Length: 197
Length: 197
Image (tube, rainbow over all chains, first blue to last red; front, side, top):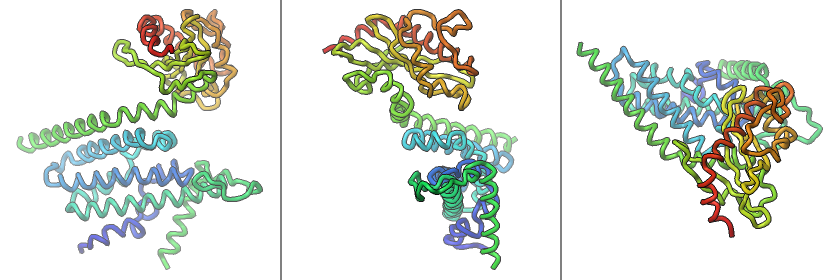
């Protein structure tokens, strides 16, 4: 049952959105979504790696021997993550500082390795590109949404701009790790409610 | 046998490609990253030490080769005299490398101020070396030619309470800066002539 290119792309945006449906890649979801800007920045970095690695794995899928495929995937993914890290250090130093160790951790983000193994290794170039792009954008949207909720409730601002007056009591629990878990859980619940109607 | 050869060849070529790409990206971004580190990490420390300078130390700078490294020196002109030099010494703190900008009056061989640039110290404890100006202020007036030690080791420096290792790290950075200064003083005097107007 082959899907069209658009369907490969769209599935990553809702039906198979990585953190909420596939429940993959939760570590950065909890770790970097303290603000919306951090969440989106992390999402874009991951999307770049995901798209590049999907493209390369798909192009090489007939050359990479099956027995060493995981080793090959890791080499490819780690290379692109290092490229992203260098580019961020050069052009987005502030974001590089706040994301810190989570940038190299993209290498072990289950989404990237998972899509390489489950999809890009078995499919031609254009569907793999669409899959990578869709999953990546879905991931970015999830991180942005979660970051937005946590930032608004936890600090009363969005993108650093205060939204409410000084009478607003920040719900600081939201910017801590337990708040992230609670927020993620509630969003998962809402998605299931909407999805199962 | 053939399978084994194919695996080795593919992995080798992939790794070679990865290495080549990373070397290229690193070379391409090296200058830009150095600029970013200068503005974000070193800049504030330099500006604080050279508060009273009439020039822009970020523009009035030169490099001298010390062994394998290039050391950047930032010139401060006070009262028309180009006799203040700011450069970085590296020490070993509690959590890792500790960078310290040291401002030296070359006419008197005296330290006029220091400022921590990069560090891996514990937030709230060792990180106070960067934030507490009371700690760094005590270094002003010390001779750059003297070995810098904490009071516990018969030195002159008051260590931060609860952060002895960090304080010793700062001292080792000052001593390292002093070593650089002694080694390169003739070349420094030479280069400074270009700045005396």
